[in-house]
Image 1 (cartoon, rainbow, N blue to C red):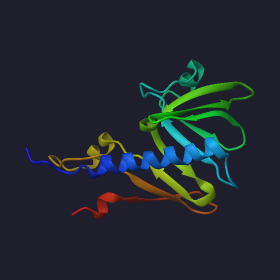
Image 2 (tube, helix red, strand yellow; image 1 turned 90 degrees about the horizontal axis):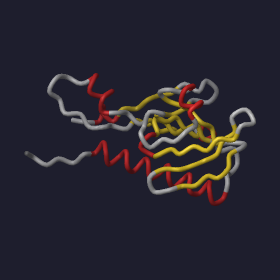
Image 3 (cartoon, rainbow, N blue to C red; image 1 turned 180 degrees about the vertical axis):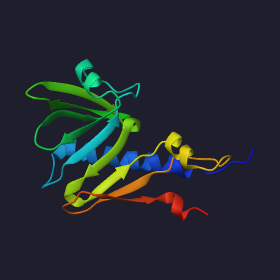
Image 4 (cartoon, rainbow, N blue to C red; image 1 turned 60 degrees about the horizontal axis):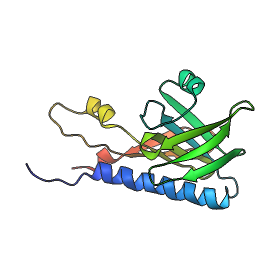
Length: 156
């Protein structure tokens, strides 16, 4: 078997490291200026911990916003914990980095989207080997429409 470089997984690790670094800075110093985050994660991930009523309401994925009110943000090597307010009901959440599907800071039009190998495999030709390939999502000013740039277009 020939050894290959798994660029998709390397990029995912690097992008999750970026998220960890940003959240670590926010935990230490708070949100600067107009920065805020929309974080969508897979609620079926085995290491996600959320209240049962939230899991029932969001059986596949959930988007949280870190902006005006959040507390107990604790950034760990494998993920983060945060307490958010759901209708005057504070709830702690545990979110591993590998459960994150999207991370967006609309204040600076920055976003990351993580694709799964399963989704990529559906688009691939039979017999083609697929690695997880990250995509970068850029938000437009007022429309908040996304332009997705696929790394697949740069592969030979």
